Length: 419
Image (cartoon, rainbow, N blue to C red; front, side):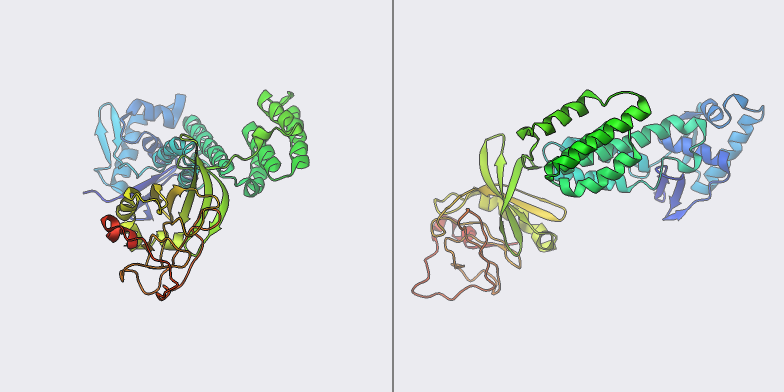
């Protein structure tokens, strides 16, 4: 098995072997390396390499010089990395070894998630954009042979930034976006989608006057540099802000197909939100498990299996669990939303410090078996239909304590589920 390497073109051209840079030689030899990286796992003909390196001024010795460059690069990288294959050469690279390829795959994956789960899209785009170390092929940017490829990659980077802005707007993060967008319109003053996002972020942050002033700035910039008015898209957004179009208001951030609205509860281990499931037009409560708990190995190991058990339970005193999923740094439970539900008639899924899921029908935590750990966090559904009441240890049984549910068919599952 050949040693792992990293072939980097999203910034200065660099090849790393075991994390250490490989010496790539002078500018022309580095240019050959860059062309091979950008065409990784595909044959690049010798004629094309000669054209890329010397253009129309190729000397008679160009082919021999190219062979010398290839020979030195093979010595530096390992002979198995650059293969001679008619009519030229091919750089052999694994799936994640070329940073540009890895970046493009992440961007494509984020586009698939943008509508249904913008939070996941943001994570993917954050990862993709963190790969960049500067402008594409930065140290060879003046080479005519690489201009088109560099421009394509730089444009894709701006597209990824724009998608991340779109996802953050969908998540309701407009206030934190304003400084980022101010910087983006300074750096890319003719990129109107950035201006439009800035107008919208300001408007949703209750800064309507600043949004209108920003449109005038955009009009002045576009007019000065291009001699034209802003696009119809930007003018139409300006008009909608003027008349305070309610459709511009934040409708709720998207989370795996749910439209998440206001926060309705906070506990030691989770936050609960009121949400809508648009496909079914159904109100739900989405409990977001905090990172501290969601990343515990025992929680990760048992979360899905035991959530499945809870989801199958049916009882008039148990709040139904509709959906559940886990992602890096968090886990989610989507359950029935019970506005104003009496605490003695409804129950909720609970996370404990070990952690544990527990079903309870009381406002005080009562566990029907000894399986619950001695220190736990209980939860009961309160006024807005969410789990908010937390205790640090189970109370002792007394005559006044409410009796827990005891349907024998679900006794082992409803008492508690240790994760």
